[in-house]
Image (cartoon, rainbow, N blue to C red; front, side, top):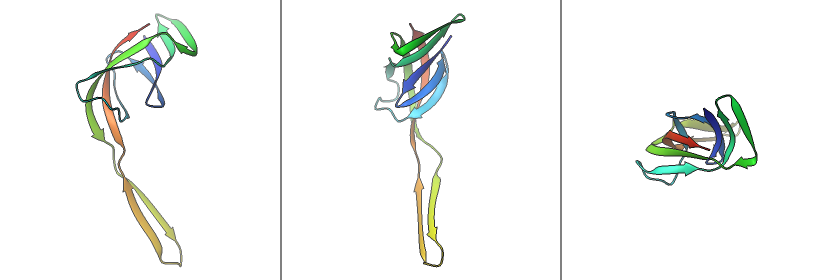
Length: 102
């Protein structure tokens, strides 16, 4: 059984017991969150496709808030002496899918 669900603006294929990293959520570590924007649901070989959403719910638990790897952004214009170096670390939330109801 799996579902395709929209979490924080991105679509994920999720299964029960799966751990995944999503863009930062406002919930604290240990909180339970639910996602109701289910686009597709597969149960026992039967596929349900929403138009645009299904009346289903995916429940998850927030495990931790982490930061991703640093990405270096370097800009340069040759022969002008222009160089700018910036870094960026994206904030993620690690969640575990508890159940898919629908």
